[in-house]
Image (cartoon, rainbow, N blue to C red; front, side, top):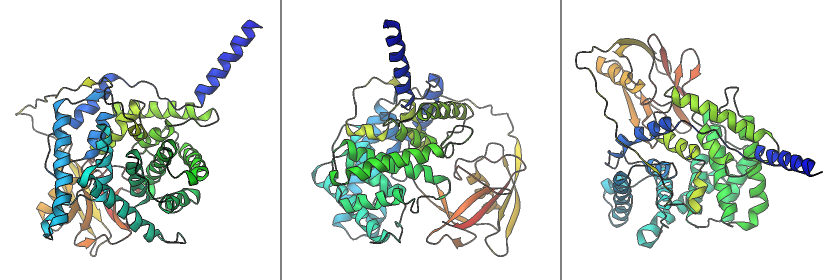
Length: 432
């Protein structure tokens, strides 16, 4: 009976582990390589290049950048808080243009918590007030009958709730209710490959509310919504192991790691996702700073929910700057890319020659230099994105989609995607 009892205990323990999301350890050199890729970004301290997500990702990782982190947080504070304070005391247009967007404000609040700070004081109160006003505006845009949509996205809506939650700032039940309804009814959450990201961010926000005992009148709906999000993400797993796609997988893993899911499928699904991510990292898929900042916490078995009570004294490995040497005599290989824009009249089609390894943005720049092509971009935390092509601007609910011919949407932005020789890239104006 003693042996039988031990066997039953072991089987029970294995069953419990199967309910927990855990991924295999990724080679430490690969992880350090990801961190080293962020170091040059941390040297760019001008307001247009600052990205709070980089700081959050490092603080939740097993890596540290030493004095660079301190300087980066200091630069974030100067840029975000002083610009907000200036715009509140001046009507000058330059001040209002320097004001951080909501898409930057929410991760900035996460960055403060990553340093074990609670937002406070006059400047902090303004940040919180602005974020709460944003949520109220978005709530009104969705409408009483939920027939509308947020001006931005449900991703930003969930991120903003999460950012306020980790600072123990309560939002009204009606604000949380809009996000709950969206998850319960699958309401406007599918925007191509971004749907898993949106679901994961909503799940992280709900998990934070649950752990922080906020909006307790909604606790039953919140618990059910967390389970709904988990199930939808698990169903979105591809045969390769990714949740949605390679770039939505880190945020999905962050969510799945926060709480167990009854059933044996979770452990196996996360193991497959971890193996797929490891292969993607080895193949150099992660070059974008925002994507890396979401991946590093997951590789360290952490999530944004850990910012409720961050461990700022946890030991981390110091990153060292790598120095790459290039041969001056080596002539780069030239590749040829066909660039198409069928959404304008007359349609644009041209062969562009660029050095091998060039980004799609380099292709667009070269096309503009050659004449007959023009484009405009806008900066975001995930990199530049197209706002206008051949003078045609993307209007509300429209965006310029990047297509690899004949009909494969690109998962990376113009600064990160590197076309191959002979490839055809189409810029297509679509409605979402």
